[in-house]
Length: 152
Ligand SMILES: [Cu+2]
Image 1 (cartoon, rainbow, N blue to C red):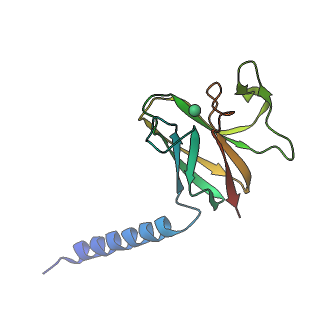
Image 2 (cartoon, protein in one colour; image 1 turned 90 degrees about the vertical axis):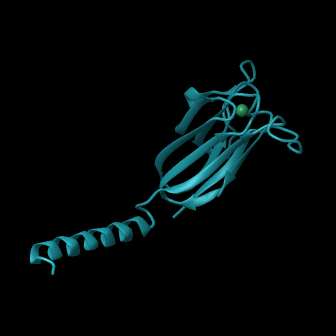
């Protein structure tokens, strides 16, 4: 036979686990995971240029965890999340071959990820059209940029 006190504690534990499961299952409270894959021809045969693959490229506003993986076998890459400027293109310095970071608002900035390494970053994002880029010298111009959308 169980003691009354034990039964109460057990019921309380079950209730708390139930609440935790409900909270975890609610959108907006748990972070959405977005996979960002930084690739170039050294990643695998068939990839002909530097590129960023984002899955999914459209998520709801709220907490978003970016799981950034440098899938290159040779090159250091990085990942910046920024707002797309309305109409215009990003400020670019052709001398350094980089987007001028002092002139843009960055929501995520993961610098210098070594080949094969992964980094996770969680941020809270408002609806809008964003851009994910790599700003190692020359990489943006060579194609390391992709659109990313946050919906309501
Ligand atoms: Cu790069």
